[in-house]
Image (cartoon, rainbow, N blue to C red; front, side, top):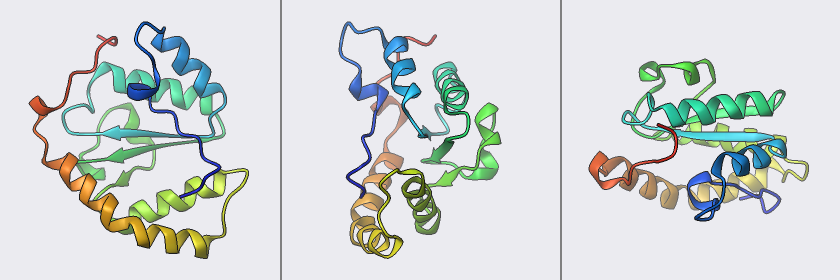
Length: 147
């Protein structure tokens, strides 16, 4: 929604053969906002706690937001439970996250315009999130490299 944002997704932006941890560390140095997608299945996985810890250390004054795909805030456990989480099923919660990210942008867009864009695309986002929530754990490829 904000063209000034240049997202980095570790599972997509690290090339085969590249040193994953080095790439993640390099990207974190220039980041001001981190989002960690959390599911019931992955919340206790070593890699999610590693990446969350790395994000929180590198971001310092910046933000780390757990994005809860199939669990609620009260079900969140482990080290990432200390951060204010966003429940993906709540339009209001997701809107608050979008506003928060925009506020951290050096080139944020006006809130009224952002809200129009958010409302325009919410149904598509919600549909995609419902699809993700309906996936069974065996449908999701395992994460490697952090055992």
